[in-house]
Image (cartoon, rainbow, N blue to C red; front, side, top):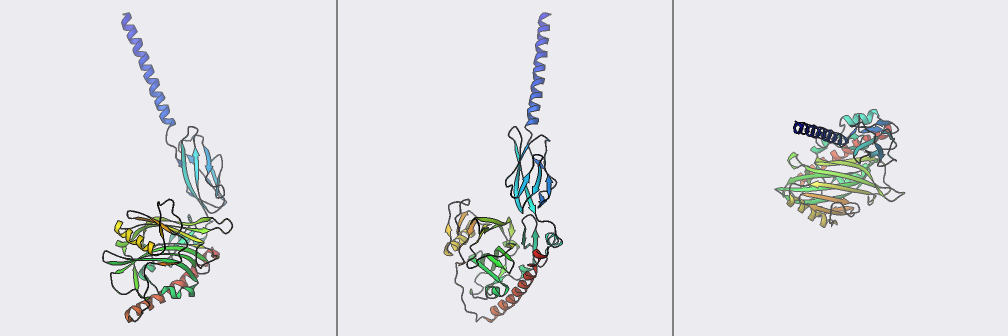
Length: 366
């Protein structure tokens, strides 16, 4: 009988210890629940406020990556200070952290809101990035491609830009990958990356040789960041960031005027392009070398006017090369068909300049 009682007592102790252990594990699991930040929006207007919280409801310490853009109080209230983006961090007492990106935007205006929601004359506006751009998947410009005669009339529209044009044949087509940066009209500066093709060997590379905008099967994954030199500090600061997405034409335009445009080296364009395969990326990089670029050792440490290639991916840091190309353009324009096509394209280009000039008034009106 005594043995049975001792056994039952021992069993009860084991059960109690087990229950205590399970409770401890449950409590520990609850304490280690991943921390996330909850917010009604990821944008806040300048001089407005946005309330953040964490999913667990526990007390946390809040901090901002840049108080000059947005401040955050001990209660998680974010106040927009200037246009830009910041990372807000919540830190729990046990070391768990969570991050949340907040974009500080301009105050809403009818014109900017209209261009955010729909494309007009081939242009839209991003409140998050505070830049104008072209939605190239459904813009009218894609029907008119590019020819070198555009350079002739660009000064008439107050367009003053540097370019890099890389030509190469690939899978039965002549390709041209073109980068621009510079002054676009009186009130905008910006940058572009364009992809163009034509049938291989269709015509000589005359001033009126025409390239079509790349078709859907030839779109490439492209991301582009434009940096503008701060005249006071000498540092290059981000002007816009275009997401890495499928494009034939990746663009961005900022209200403002450059101090110097010959060359436009107060702008730096950093782009990431994913080609169809390693062969195609190699052909592009060979063109970059011929155009004055140097090959870098890694994508994270690219010097100015250099590139890094990793398989089909190419990363380019472009700043000082003014008129870069890996082919000499023939000035022979005796081919009448080509000249007529070029003239038509020039007329369409001038029409585009007029539209752009009208669009340039939007930041002042909005």
